[in-house]
Length: 129
Length: 284
Image (cartoon, rainbow over all chains, first blue to last red; front, side):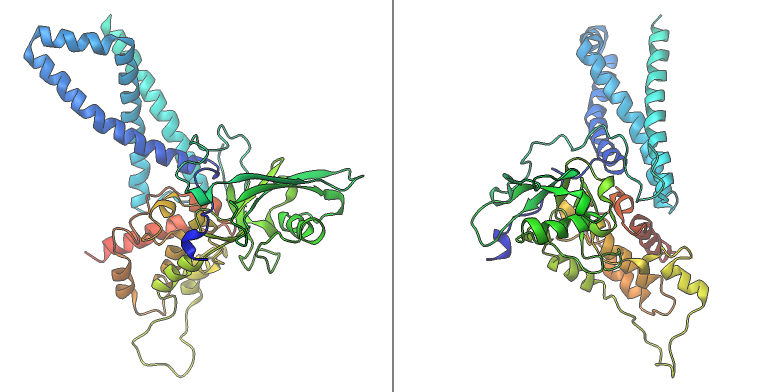
C-alpha cells in the first residue's frame, strides 16, 4: 500500500473552533469584504461627481435594505480588520503572545469593533436628521 | 471566555464544529463512515461512550467511527486508560501509540473532543459525552489512531536540530550560564527545549493543513528557535538563511491554535514571532 492510498485524517471538519482560529478566519473574510467594498466606494465617489441623476440611482440602491445590510457588513469589516490588525502589529513586534493576552486582546477586538460599528451608525443616522 | 493556560477546557462554545459540509475537501478514500457500537457489559453502572476513529489498511473499507461503551467503575482516570481498557477487554484490534503514560514521551497525542492533547494527561471526566477521539489532523493514517509522521520528521531534519560550531572543540563541555540555559529551558520550565515533539500544535495548525508540504509548522519552528536561542550554537546566520522563505516560515499567519493546544503549555507562536524578529533585526 502506498502513501497516497491512505486516508487523510480529518482537519477542519472536526477541529473545534476557538477564538484563535475563528478571529483569524474572520480577519481574512473581512479583508476580502473590504477589497470588494473599495471599488463600491469608488463607484459612490464617481456617482457623486457625475451629477444628481447618477447619484440618486446609486443612493436608491444603498438606501434599500440590501444596500444597508451591505454597508453595515462593510462598516463592521472595516472596524474589525482595523482592531485585529492592531493585534497583528503588536504580535509582529513580539508582544502579546501569552495565552491570556491573546484571549483578552481577541475579545477586546470583537467588543471594540462592534461598539465602533454601532457608534458610527448611530452618528450617521443622527446626522440624517 | 478568557483562557489563561492551554490545559484550561472551554466551557461554552457557540460552535462545536466549523460550519463546513461534512465531507468538505475530503478525498473519497478519507470519507468517514458509521461504524459499529460495542456495548458495555451487562450490569455496568457507570457507562461512558467513546466515539473512536477506526481505519484498517488490511481491508478496502473507508475509515469509520466505532462507539465503545466503557464501564468507568473498572477503568483508570485518563483517556489513555480507557483506550487501553478497550484494547484489553473490548476490541483488541484498536491501534494507538503510547509509552510513558505521564506526558513526557509525546506518543499518545491525538484529537480529543476536537482539540489535540495527550491521551495520558486528559481526564476522562473532562471529556464530552460521548468523547470523540480522532488521530492527529491532516496526516496520512497508518491504522486507527496512528498517523504517519514521516513528513513531519523530515521537516524536523530540515532545520538541522543539532549543535553546530566552527570554533575549536574545547577540552571539556561547551559551557553555558544558567541565564543562557533559561533561554532554552525557560525560567518556568516551559522554554522551547521542553517540547516533546508530540506534534499536537502542527496537526492543529490550519496553515499547516493547507500548506504543510512547504510550511514547517509550529513544532518544527519552535525547535528551529531552540537552536537559534542556544548560546553555544554558532550557525545562527546559516539557520536564519535556511528559514527565510515565503513558505517555510512566513506561512505562519499568527492563528495561534498552536499555543492554545500545546499539552506542555509551551508557546510556539511566540517562538515563531521571535524568529521573524531575528530575521528583521539582522538586516540593520
